[in-house]
Length: 206
Ligand SMILES: NC(=O)c1ccc[n+]([C@@H]2O[C@H](COP(=O)([O-])OP(=O)(O)OC[C@H]3O[C@@H](n4cnc5c(N)ncnc54)[C@H](O)[C@@H]3O)[C@@H](O)[C@H]2O)c1
Image (cartoon, rainbow, N blue to C red; front, top):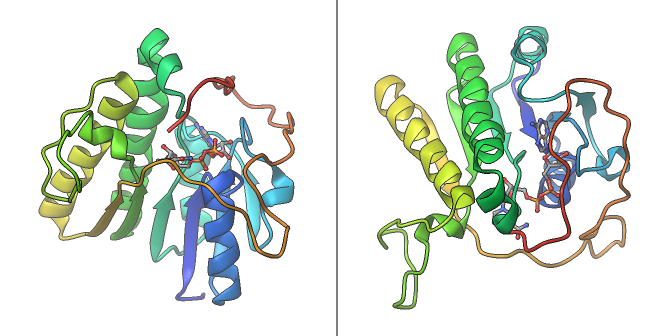
C-alpha cells in the first residue's frame, strides 16, 4: 500500500491534466477518475485513468475500495456559465450532487484531505478590487451557486470531521505545458459508455 496515492477527478480535463502532470513529476501515485465528457485520455500523462462518471456512486465506491487514497483533488465539473442558466438542474447535479457523492466516499473511506476546484464565479460581481478570500460571495448564476453550495458542504463536513480542506477560487485560466504536451483544448474523445452526461458547448466557460 502506498501512502501518497491521490485521486484526481477531472484529471483528463484542461486544469486537471496539468495538475496530474505536476503530481506525477513529484512522484505521487495518481488515479484519475473522469468520464472524458470534455476531457481526453491522451491528456493523462501520469497514473491510471478510470473511466467513470461521478453520478455513478457504485463505481466511485468501488474505486475508493480498491485504493487507499490520502487525498482527493476534485476538478470534474460542468463549467459553461450561459448553459448553467439554461439548464440549472444539470449544473446542480453535476457540480453539487456529484460533489456530495465524492464527499460521501471520502467520509466512508476516511479520506480527510480534499482540494476543491471552485471558481471565482462564487463572488459574482464583487466591484472593489482586489478580490480577496474575505470578499463576500454573491454568485449571480447557477454555475457559481452550484460551486458555492459545494464549498458549503465541504466546510460543514470539514468542521464535523476535522478535514484538511482547500477551495481554489481561480478566475479564467490560460496557458499550456511548456513541453507542448498539454494545452487548452485536448482532443475530444467519446469513449465513455456509462450513463449520459452533459456535453460542453463552445459558449463562455469559467
Ligand atoms: N477553466 C477555467 O478557466 C476555470 C476557472 C475557474 C474554475 N474552474 C474549475 O476548474 C475545474 C476544471 O476546469 P477545466 O477548465 O479543466 O474544465 P474541463 O472541462 O477541461 O475539465 C473537466 C473534466 O471533468 C470531467 N467531468 C465532467 N463531469 C464529470 C463527471 N460527472 N464525472 C467524471 N468526470 C467528469 C470532464 O470529462 C473533464 O475531463 C472545474 O471544476 C471548473 O469549474 C475552471
